[in-house]
Amino acid sequence: MDNLNRPIFGLNRAPFLVHSTMNKYPPTLNVKFFCTEAGNEPVREWLTNLPRDDRKAVGTDIKTVQFGWPIGMPVVRKMEPELWEVRVDLKERIARVLFTVEASSMVLLHGFIKKSEKTPASDLETARQRKAALKRNK
Image (cartoon, rainbow, N blue to C red; front, side, top):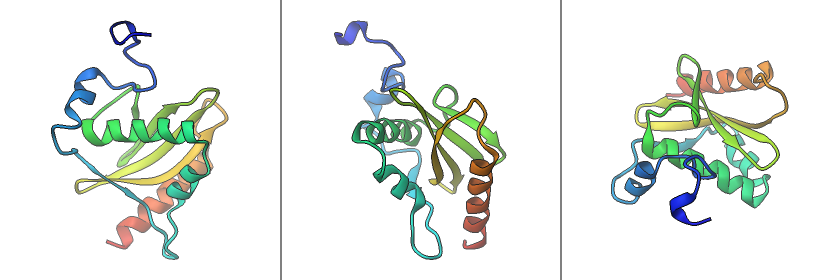
């Protein structure tokens, strides 16, 4: 498919303007991985276990948020105060990365593959606990 006829919201779902400015201007947000007290980075570990194409799709959407913040649907949805999700459409499934914004950083709290319409309560609770730990350790 040539560039003139490609869908506006394909794999790189951000509008052309967002992608064309990514290389010219600094990002709006820095991206950080939540780190446990033991030094583990759960979202980084989750990402490394995904297939290469899925990692690339998740990374593209995180980069879209990084350079285009604040951004809304279809890429980002607010879940509750100070908690958002990056919505990633993979080939045959759906991934979500829950994050919070602290100062000028997007902190990636939890990543998972959705198996139902509604975000599982356990995944939301994991993100809430990590967000609380982040605030305690400031």
